[in-house]
Amino acid sequence: MAEFAAGLAEGYEGDLTLVAHEEETPAGEAFTERVLAEAAAARGTTQVVQFADATLAHLAPRVHALTGAPVVVSILGNDLPRDDEDAIASLHGALRAPGVTVVASCATIAREVEARFGMTPRVIHPGVDTRFWGAVTSSRDHVEEFRERVGVPVEGRIVLSTGPVTEQSGIEWFAREVLPRLPEDVRYVVASDGPPAALESLTSLPRVVRSEVHLRNETAALFYASDLLVVPNLPRPDAPSGYRMDAARASATGLPVLLADIEGCADTAANLGLRTAPADDAAAWTAASQAALMGRPGPTRVAEPWNLVAYYYLQLYREVADLPA
Image 1 (tube, rainbow, N blue to C red):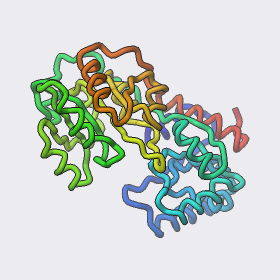
Image 2 (cartoon, one colour; image 1 turned 30 degrees about the vertical axis):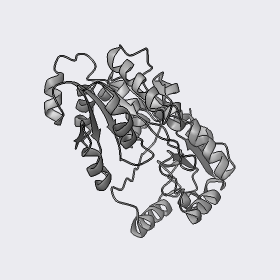
Image 3 (cartoon, rainbow, N blue to C red; image 1 turned 180 degrees about the vertical axis):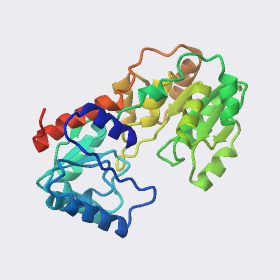
Image 4 (cartoon, rainbow, N blue to C red; image 1 turned 90 degrees about the vertical axis):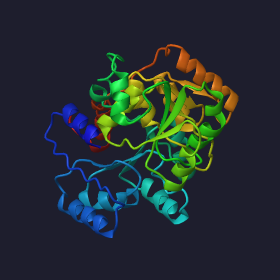
């Protein structure tokens, strides 16, 4: 959100004040009341309201009515309450309400929005802070120092995955089905904070190492310390994955990336020119991982920087709110 806000401020030179609300804990009744109260207070001074994900999008029609301003809702995919029929029904009405415009993070999520809510959203891929994530590409002379810094094995080659260990993530599947087929010097590092039971089961497997890296600068160092990022998602038609920011950031640092050829993973790969392997095919993943570890990465396209993505949003804001050029 901070990167998007900075890019928006950089791209818009008019009379614009950006007010952002971001909660570290799940938004409750008090937060909702505060959002609505501030929306009412902002009537007449607000040109556009942006919901950064779908978590509070059910409030979009009320915020539109209170502010008198159009509302843009971005849907990432993992923010949709797919297991809550009442919440989905509420979103169905909210997203189709007058004054509300919807943006999807990738083609997969756009198709889901169309299927669930009967509307065709815009597609704007998330951006990357290329000035930060591209800062470690110049040299690999100090890989051992970076590995020591982030607490991963200094010797051998490192295959990395990030994010929660769920069935859909395919991380445990990769550890059980693919890692044993890779050369003995390969270690599988998983940077995740949960769930605890899944992590305990995972780290009991041979050659699997957990990393407790969370901070942005540590994650960049972890990318720099690794030899390959894998995103081995398994298919889940009822809850498809969205755009993979971890893959975009890793690729921006120069780290080779291999993704499953499904859903938002495939969208990310197509957008950035990254390699894919057939989901749930251990032999194919073994061959592709070995090729990526041994060969030089092919040509890729660095994800667009946030200031350019913010410009795309700014063009949308100008359209829905009739802002000056």
